[in-house]
Image 1 (cartoon, rainbow, N blue to C red):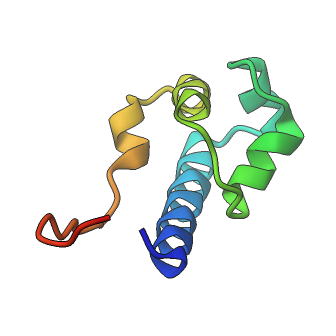
Image 2 (cartoon, rainbow, N blue to C red):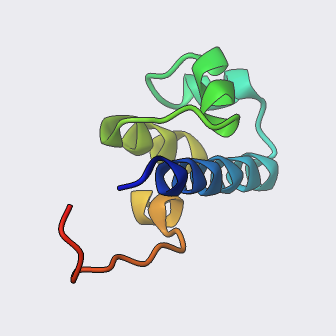
Length: 83
């Protein structure tokens, strides 16, 4: 995956997390209390820091949504291209 594609996906994920936070009406500290993440880290992920899959699971717990709602991003994979 090209660096530009990775950055685009990370930015899409960051926007999704911002939307979920706004919808939840919770503060970063309140979100952190609902999962095993620090409130400062949650804010970093909303600003476009690359995250691990297990972190997505924890964020889903905090937002009270299924992890698929977080990773439902617009991304097309061209399977005809080699890595």
